[in-house]
Length: 259
Image 1 (tube, helix red, strand yellow):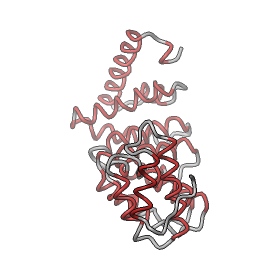
Image 2 (cartoon, one colour):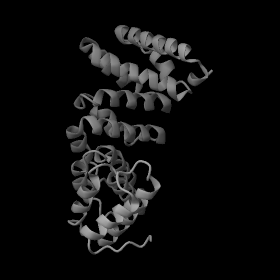
Image 3 (cartoon, rainbow, N blue to C red):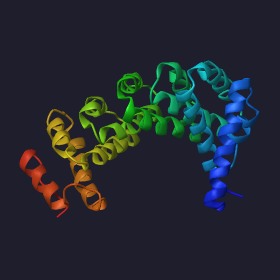
């Protein structure tokens, strides 16, 4: 029976049980319960488990060395779900303290399984939102990696910080403007669209794009930004028409082709 097949009271009981089991494992430096939960087929069971690790880390500093030892062991598992949950647990820690879990992301970026690599992206997003300085410094190290998928994943991973503080990630995105890989460029355009429709972000993005040299890519990004204001019209601060008017006024080389 899956997590959301249970009623609310049963879910609360299960969460409490998972938290107690994982705390007992951490205290004893065992990983029996953690392994079972981290390998569970149910996404929400795995999530509850890695969130429990994060709570213990924040609430009991004396157990932090035990947690790191256990996560190091778990990340060597041949089961991708366990490695995925380990990365997510490290991400919970990295929201506050990144240095001690940095090596998980250095290794996770190159994991053979996509769910582990996707966990790295998701963790970069949540860590970058709350703890941007070390995360963006780390991300910059991989911006020009020879593997195009690494470059794409880093571009995607820093997106969430850009939705509230576009000025923090735009210099990094700019470094990818002449990337020769179509998949990386597509992700770059996507990220620019995603950070431009939030409150106060369009102005920052447009001003920064004026300093970019790849005019073709900039025009693709502007088309995407305008399209996003229609696709996400229920969430965008400006209407699509307002976005078009602002862009045409402040980026004079652009003439909208969507209307």
